[in-house]
Length: 388
View 1: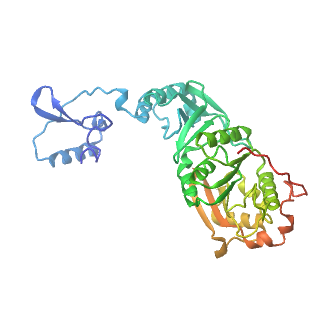
View 2: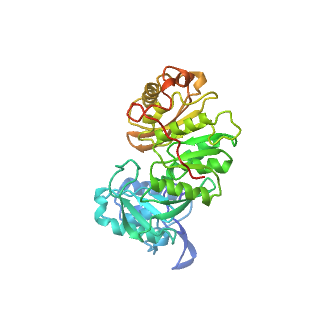
View 3: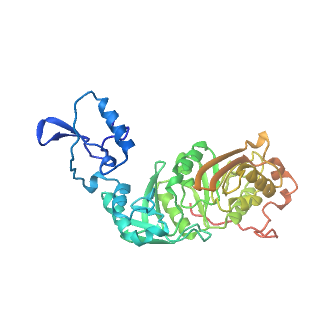
């Protein structure tokens, strides 16, 4: 109880009760370091009252406890090494043998020291410590990195949902904090479903879905992501069709290919029961590619989105309505809007799921299906090539 309440010295591999070297018959309770050199009378009065509850005679004496780095957390070590007043480094992301930290400007003079602490405390699990030097600023959602400790090796492997993913962290997007969301969505998929993943990345949705038994058509614009998408398909011994196209071209040309084989015994493309749109910065901009492409049964759409709005759910519904040309706020659409995570104090990530409305599939926009170009003009889609 005294450890839990913060009265005693605590930490990994730290013993709060030790033998008294001067009197082998006595035990010493090691008090928290907050009582050493502290003149706050209230704190000491609180301690005195707590000790009286023991109903045992006691004396206070100084004691030197030698601690090694193994007994301290990264946070505690940096607290000792960095100047007073410097904000603590509260979290980091582990990607295989890589640790990714986001250092504040005031941390930068000490970045190599910070990196070494992470490296040494990992017990050999980490070999590369990186810092993001600026925010995401390209269409592939990658960001510039610098190695602050260890080897310059960005190619790593991670395990998620029973799958192995290989990636080059400097050239593709990966966020380990999204693991629970990846698993949540894939759990919704039935083993007999057909999934079209428009912005698949290296496959955090596509590969587990294929491993589950789904027929998967996975696409990504980034050629490096496409490379690892194909590789991860092979590593996990799954089968799916992989594409390297713009998401709009992918879904429209795939729909044309599906129409051409509809009703035939041999079908190169199957109509989707699920469409995944995982590019939160711009997924909603591709929603207007969907009307007119599909017949019943209409697919469920899972679209990710970043929002800074005061009422993000209302704002998201409004955007979706505008893009589709009709509302999704109807029981037949099975609308669900979930908050996925906090990105920053004023920015959150959401997933909006809905069944494509009949009005969008068969309404006034249906005649435009498969012909709307990226800027809204006419374009003739070509059937994409794929890697099986």
